[in-house]
Length: 161
Image (cartoon, rainbow, N blue to C red; front, side):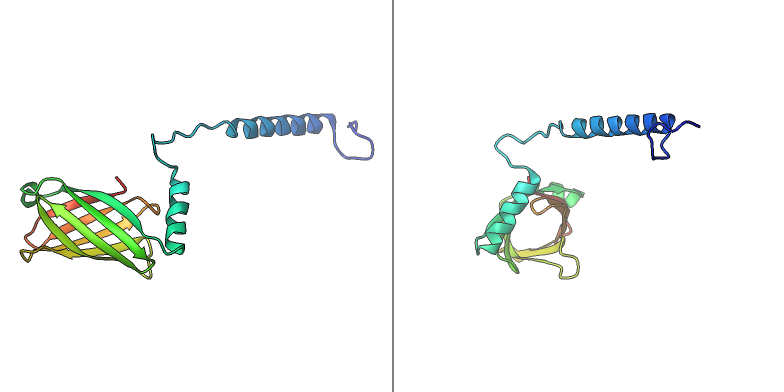
């Protein structure tokens, strides 16, 4: 077996394999550098929005997350699609507001200490109805969950819409 490079154990066949591998690696790195990421019109990328959200809280500012509530049973169909918002005033306190067919529910929202992506929001209406929502955040500004009104109506909630 003839050595391709003096003072090494590298043969011509091994040198060609290493050269091809290096070439393929270089091409793949160049291709991955040319990736197009669509940005929503007038919106921010998820990481930028998450950084802005964290910076607002760190600087003592509030941040607002809005969502839509979609009926998931027959009783909820009478309410139709609702809206909700969570306004974080500090790291450990948020105000929860929901509107279902003209009924406004107000209360508070908290995150689980052991599972910080999971949270609970509770609110009451002026006529004595109670709304409980369980949600999980997929990013700092987007999440989903379920809500139940004390009269039996259930909803799917999508946060970040």
